[in-house]
Image (cartoon, rainbow, N blue to C red; front, side, top):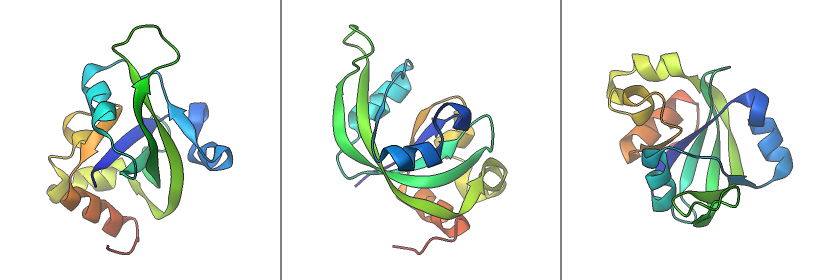
Length: 138
């Protein structure tokens, strides 16, 4: 299993709305690096759900429920989507400041590539974020 992070502005699509919807199509990605990350996602992979622009914190964990397929919002075959389902709310949301302050997370995509909307998360980074979020270790 691999780990990922996706960003959503809460005023556009919040974690609470995501939980109400029970599943969503992660669409509209128009960055090649983010697209490549979507293409690499496998069903069952776990995904940190991050509120960007407002809140600036990891608020939940989603799971990939359907692997990459053509983005229905465009005819351009270069762009793909995945389906995500909410899995768990983070007990203690993990702020960007907390992530940046932890030297063990200095190489995390959200720190190094701040504008990237879909990033990779290593096993070690995942465990550290879970620790900060008050979630049990695996």
